[in-house]
Amino acid sequence: PLSHLFLNPLETVIVRTPAQVPSLFSQIESALKSGYVAAGYFAYESAAAFEPKSVHHFSRQNESTDNPLAWFGIYQKAFVFNHATGEWLDGQPPALADSPVPHLDGVIGAIETALPLTLDAFTRRIEAIHEWIRRGDVYQLNFTHSMRFAVPGSSAALYAHLLANQPAAYAAFVHAKQNHRILSFSPELFFRVEDTGAGRRIVTKPMKGTAPRGRTSAE
Image (cartoon, rainbow, N blue to C red; front, side, top):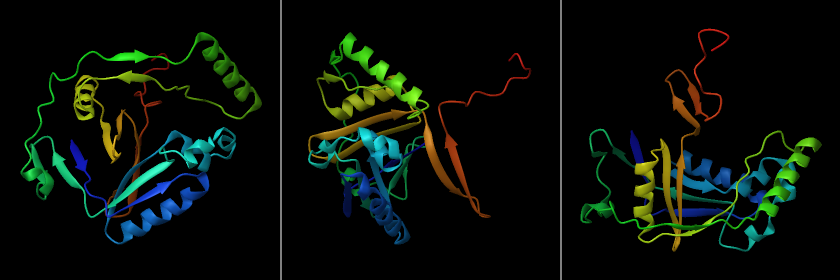
């Protein structure tokens, strides 16, 4: 397996409204054509740019807060680490050459969590989801909510701890700005474009519907 490290963006592209998303893709495509690479994230609320019905649920708070709909950095290159060999491909990042690797084991203490959702609030939201399905607004929906918790230690240590206990093929640690980090652990690959020589192939690895077919109808 390979890990990709992106350091010191040449520029950043920040999107705060659904209408700005098309220009984001244009800037990324332009950077790729110039030989650069891009890395970043889309917030859940950016769905308003892709699904018209979700615009009704878009919060205008994203336009004025520090939580954009999308954040992408344009980089000179990506540093690639091969976990099988324990070596960097095409050279080690200069920023890490003189920096000792921190010891991240055993530095996570007790995690205190608080669920800011009462039973009544949960019930109301489920009822609203049922109504959306009946109206045809959605055909399926991932019901998620935020949680607040305090963790002693660094965010990097927490990332290493969670990844060790819940190995995910597509994990990411994003430090886009000061005092703001994203720790992501996903078993799914949305899609990857591969150059086969004769053309391009799109590979996707969704979490649903990927069980192997049985030998019989019963299986």
